[in-house]
Length: 402
Image (cartoon, rainbow, N blue to C red; front, side, top):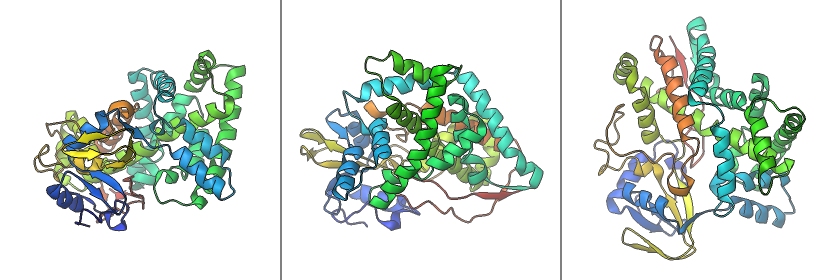
């Protein structure tokens, strides 16, 4: 794994603890070519920032790839292709701008104060069994359901509807991982058929009887657009926003709780000084970013650091490695809430900087704060079991007891 030319970011050995490998590679070169993936790998923070800001680097169109593969095998995953056509981080200009504007207005529908109040109420309900029963799974019972319940509140869905939609969509993000199969595409399409049928019904209801909720706003904004989406595509956009609002945020909440619980001295410090909670969230984003890497393609020839990237070549931006660059973050492997220094790169940058970053930070801060208000629980794991995805850092479970 320490050989630059044979490095493979999909290697199973990287799932549990990839950071020592990244450190060894970064010492050799902050950017290098790997024959194994036929791509440039970027590990240094300065170089990743430079790449994010370069408009000559395009995001990859996964929808075109999935469509080509599926049709070659005699499949047509209609709902999956509709979804991928709505995923902002797979769109380049000019189609990226109108979609991003629509999503931005939806996320700004409620004030930040009302959003925070809604999240606090959800967090208090979900964490209550810890004190009542003396134990809880902080992933399955807390971090996983909190973000979709908030997105349901924003959309105007009942809690049981939001939970059903989250469970139905839960397996879909696997298709974002390189190396998945046609079987994964078929399974995702089946789930999306159910989810999109549900959302089309709700969209039709809101068109007949608009309500004071985000789904009605989305219907209204779409109706006023220069080129409005049909209901099939509007349902796909709604499912993308819903998934984007819970997948990585749940991972961030879980990762933040794990870091606090596995560092009892920092847990007690943050519990005693609530003003450190946002810093604990930022440290969780830095040390265990939910999205570990993103991939880009060069539209034309460009330079990053002293390397020439040719048109058409692919670049893997290793966010998880850049966040631990010792030239930027002293003692980079330590969990230090309140750490001063450069912002983390976990929410992307440039054209594709995460629109919902403020929502994820807000939810994570409130979720951590709700746990920190009570006695410190003991965690029942020596180390987490991470889900087997190369680009997403998310635990399967986090059992704790008082």
